[in-house]
Length: 105
Image 1: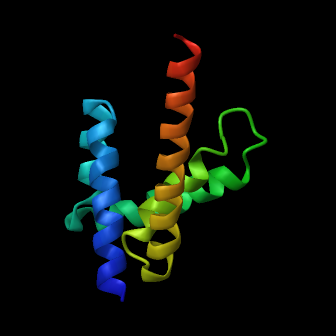
Image 2: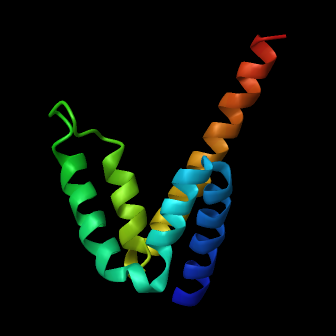
């Protein structure tokens, strides 16, 4: 089951990379590479901690899901929930875009 969850998460993250601006997509791709594990884990943990302290000016709630996505690459128990969260977010985003297009007509 873990291999299936990893494949699903990888497909979602690949799609996300293509949607991001080129520079950000490259940065995400580098962090997702197997050789970047020792960078990915501390960065993911720092983003999660920064997300918890989102009341501070520089830190924000956006850091929490990003950190969890990075950690899900290496922690199997996070793969399924983060894959589902990506699906949910993508659906909400598409629904919001459709509503916005209809309102602009």
